[in-house]
Structure formats: C-alpha cells, structure tokens
Length: 165
Image (cartoon, rainbow, N blue to C red; front, side, top):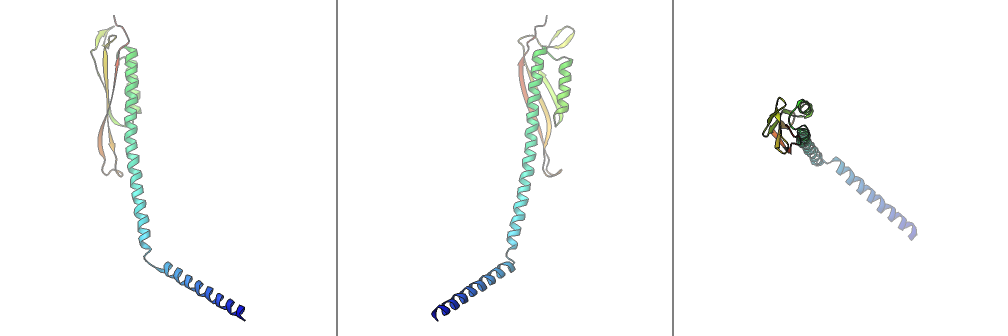
C-alpha cells in the first residue's frame, strides 16, 4: 500500500503545483501594470522614428555637399583644358547646376583673365584659378518645422593648360 500512497501524494502534489501555476499565470495576465511596457514600446518607437528622420535629413545635406564637390572638380578640369571659360564650360555649368539638389547654385571663378581671340575669359598657361561653388540648402526638421538654412561651399583650384597668343 505504500506504493499507492506515494502515487496519491505525488499526484496530489503535482495537482497543487499546476493549480498554483494557473493562479500565478491568471494573476499576471489580469494585472494592469503591463501598461508601462506598452508605453515603453511606444516611446522607443517614437524615438527610433525621430532618429531615422534626423539621419535622413543629415544624409541629404551630405549628398548636396558631395554633389558640390564633384561639380567644382568637373568645372575646374574643364577650365584647365579649355584655358578659360568658353561656351562648353558655360553649358557644363548649366548642366551641373540643374543636377544639384539645392537652391541658388553659383559658380565664381577668381583669376586674372586675359583678352585673347576676342574673348575676355581666357586664362594664360600656368596661371592659377580658383573656383568657388556655393548653394543654399536646408537641414530639415519634420515636414516644414525647424528647417535650418545652410550655405554649402566647395572650392577647387587649377592651372590653365592652354597657351594664348
């Protein structure tokens, strides 16, 4: 009979444990303290979204700066090869200006121009020139809130490779 008594005690013990576990589970599921977890998830989601928006806004400014640097280098090389500013250089500047995702894009060339072949925009061989490209862009906030205007500047330098008689 001791075997039967042991089995009954063991079964009784397991039933008590199962009932205790059911009670704990029911109490946990019915608690209202879990609202804090939902609030934490919502706050985390909002913070994550704000971080993503800020990263995208910063990346747009970095892209504009990269476009300005590339445009300055291309125009500087064109001026080196042409020996000044000609119609091809003007066409390249207009094309690049349209491709830059910014407002008020300006190209300024600082050098000593000479008059050759009826043009005032020639640069003698060995004469250095300095090109400055500026553009206005915005570091955006959310939609139109908190747009911070920025003026981006890129510089390039070169030396004319054309001899003008």
